[in-house]
Amino acid sequence: MKHADALFRWKDPYDLPGTNALFAAAMAENAAFQRRSCRDYDHICAIAGLERGAKLGPGDLHRLPPIPTLYFKRHTLRSMPENRLLIRAASSGTGGVKSRVGFDAGSLRRGLDMSLTMARRHGLLSVKPCHYFILGYQPRRENDTAFSKTGFGFTFFAPALSRTYALVWQNGGYQLDLKAMEKRLIRAAKGTVPIRTIGFPSYTYLLLRGMEERGIHLRMPAGSLITMGGGWKQFEGQKVEKSELYRLARSVLGIGEAQCVEFFGAVEHPILYTTCPRHHFHIPVYSRVLIRDPDTLEPVPEGTPGLVDLLTPMTASMPLLSVMTDDLGVLHPAGTCGCGIEGPWLEILGRVGVRDIVTCAAGAAEYLKGVAP
Image (cartoon, rainbow, N blue to C red; front, top):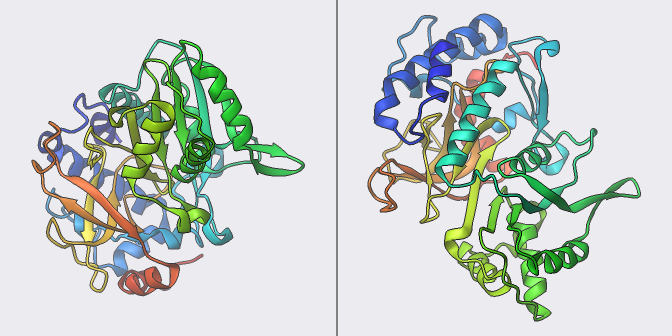
């Protein structure tokens, strides 16, 4: 995967024009490997009409079959034996059904290169220790969810003096303990050590709303950050606009919008998308995003809503080259943000239900027919 290795070592994480040819070469390289190594993926490509050895230039990547995340929740596509997978991760499992992925050494190395470059670009790397408040799962060997791994991994961007978790393991299950987190947050805010939060926006909102209702207003030490990632899951009915989260961060913690950072990603697409100062998800060099028409699955022009299709050559262990999510989104043209990053940016409009995604992905289902589970 020499092209992919070069791509993930690229110094400017938003230099899309400078990496278009390299990205296409990395995708073609990965696609050829996956077709040789995963019989089912080769079958999917053949049914989709993509012949072996087909030219895949920058303008041809839409020809790679987009595999719905729903498919990964029910089937396993693997291009390497189990003993070569160093880390395994699962999605949060809406409705109890999870996607499960595994990563080999090369894929993990590329992921590490990407994470360090993105963290450096967005000012997340620091040598100054801090207190971490993770609004997510306390790690356990039995917990293979991607967020439990990424949440813990985030605590290495700056040395950790402490880690406090909102979801703690008690009496044989995870319990949400925001009261304990609130007490430790109040105590930490009295010191001078920076505080960093990372976690689901739903838990962040519940914590801050409860504190505001009780009249608690803190001023977090200089260098503190509020970071969020993931969806609202079972708290979808309480979902609020981002502006309300920013207001609560300022009111309760004394944190301005510039210190609020969001992440976007998926277990089936392990690329780190980080918001710019205007809270937009610009596309990094490690990926490309297509928006597809829900009925035809054909790519639509920039500025047109549709299903979000995420492309990356990062992973060798599984054919995750083109993954169609159940997110509705819009790809905005380059130069329309104004933050200084000139590349296009992705706006997530919402999610469609399982029934809808099955209907929308009817075209994809056609070329998935006959693939072994």
